[in-house]
Image (cartoon, rainbow, N blue to C red; front, side):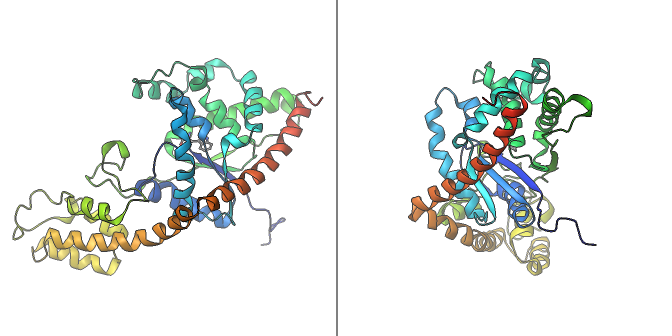
Length: 341
Ligand code: TRP
C-alpha cells in the first residue's frame, strides 16, 4: 500500500543535559536507539544546556565544557549530522520566548504535583532546588518539544510524567488560543516513544552510573578500560581457578553477551562451569571485545578532538536549521496569541 505522503518522515525531538561524559550505559540505552531512529525519522537532537542550569545554577560556568563533549559523544556513537539535526538549546532564543508564553498558561498545581519534582528535590537535597526555574523544568521541556511540533519524543521511563505534562500544556494552549474545543489545534500532542533500558550493567553488576564509579566512558582510553576490566569481580564463589564457576552470577558474562562474538559464548560458558578456563583469560577476551567495540567510536571522536572547529561547525549548522523551524513556530504562535505587532 502506498502512503499518501511517501517522503514525509515523522519528526522526533529529544535532548540530554550536558552534565558529564556519556558511558556505555547511555550508549546501549539511548544512543543506539537514536542512531537507529535517524534512518527513519526527521530527528532533532539537542544539548539541553539551559536545563542543566536548573540544578547547576550556583556555578553555571561549569556547563560550558560539557556542551561540546556531549555533542562529541553523540557523533562518536554514530549520530550523523547529514541525517539528523544536532543543536544547542540556548542558541535557539525562540525557546526562551515560547517558554515565557507557556509559563503564563501553566497552572502551578500541575507543576507542584509532578512526581519528579518532589523526588528530585529530595534526591538532590544537597542543592537548594527551591527555585522558580526548577519547578518550571517541565514547562521548559514542553517548550523544547512542541517548538518543533514532533509526533514522538524518545525518552526513558523516568521522563513520562514530563511528557504527560507536555501534552496537557499543549492541549491548554490549543484550547485557549485556537478556538476552544471545536477549533483547529496548532500544537500536536506528542507521544512518548519509550526507550528500553540498557542491558549492559555497570562493572559491579549494578546499573551503570558515573556516581557509582562502575562506568566506562565512551571516550575512555584503552589503558584505563583494560585496568577496569581486569579489576572486575567475577563469580565470587570461584576462589581458585580450579573451582567451577557460574556465568549467570558473574559480572563479566553480560558484557560477553553484548560485546563478544556470539559463537564464542558456548565455549566461555562451558569453560567457566568446568573450570577449564580462568577468569583472567575471560577478562583478556573481554578487553579484546571491548577494544573492537570502542575502536570506531574512538576513531570518530578523534576527528573532532583533532579539529574542534569541525564540531562547532556541526552545531552551528544544526542551530541554523533548528532556528529556522523555531522561527516558523513563533510567527504562528505570536499571531495566535495576538502578539504579532
Ligand atoms: N529532561 C530530560 C532528561 O533529563 C532532558 C530533556 C530536556 C529532554 N528537554 C527535553 C528530553 C525534551 C526529551 C525532550 O533526560
